[in-house]
Length: 128
Image (tube, rainbow, N blue to C red; front, side, top):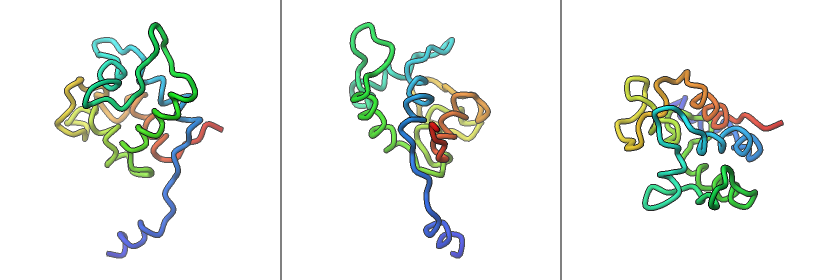
């Protein structure tokens, strides 16, 4: 009970847009051998949370990035990577991920560089 009360009293880290745009968002369009890029599945339909890329573009404009930031922020729990769907969904179950991600396991372990980037953002890393 004491830990629960203390966790409610401690300030939660905020999610930094600059860090997101510079470090997190590029992961969604990056090509990783053997995997589909995140943006392919997650910019349309019922699993879409990213803005569609304009034809031929490999990044979003500032307005689209802001919309992406707002959408992706709903998939994380600031300060708690372990309960953040953005990290747990594409992580191998053997490494602590959940069972459901139709797009394959983007992260074999929690030591994956992309996982570490997302984790840092959730933990409050800033773009400064």
